[in-house]
Image (cartoon, rainbow, N blue to C red; front, side, top):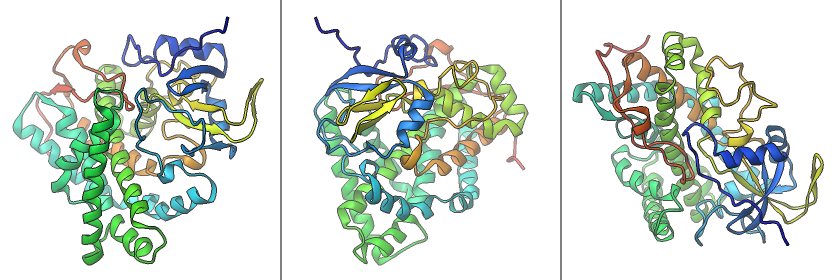
Length: 408
């Protein structure tokens, strides 16, 4: 009798901030455990060190076109990332990384700080003027994230509602009717960006799309569909994950009041607190999919060429061999690289922007509204457990007397 493999993804959390018990049980078995995906068996990487080693290994391919490539989707659909630079390997992937590197450089992102601060301050002014309670995700998380990626790309912010509606469809592939909704939203977003490219070619601005059109599209270094897909994915990734981190990170702090007080009262903790929240929440919860192009030995386990691999940042970030008390949120934790932005050649290209957005968003929020608190009991905050991006999009909050002015 053939032993049945555990089904993955596993989503049955009993506590929003604890990985599913079944997932932790797999982590206790071995650094690599075979699981059953919708597409067949694959190796689930459960340890931090094995994850970093494999994500750095050139024998691990991101190409979804390879036969046997693993997928986490339950329904047949064309995955959002297929055909994009995020699913390329080697020199082909390096070309796109080089194309985008300057746009996401530390220097360029740092230059955006005043604009991000201004956006946060304006949103908080609006919240205070309208008064509590409010849904923090809609009033603050989404618009902070959207305004930042819009400024970087050169997308008019007045169009934010349009793309927000369509982007949300991309991150819930398990919902009924998902293939049709995803296909429809991709067509709408691609059409919008295509028209924007034409406008930027005629009237360029100081933004990423204008520069990419002038430096890469017009000279023929990339074709229009390639650039459309690249910008479309940057828009999608830059919106959903950061918005969820702002909202879900705030929820985590509000549900851990001693940690909230530390961040609010000791500003020097903020940078480390953001890294700890990224580790603790691991909102891209289901994992990073790869396929082995050659046999790879990981410790005592051999992964054969052609076998699928799922690296779990959620489990790697909770590895007891790496982190002391990994299931505890500790904003004073000694900094150590986490896996929430991935690792290796495919490290998230926008990680610098995401970090500065989060630092500013939390700083402004906790400084301006020092009495911020949940407007409902902890148990009434709804979390999404079956979506690609974990977290809450409904965070009712209230506050007492706000502070006037902005942080120095």
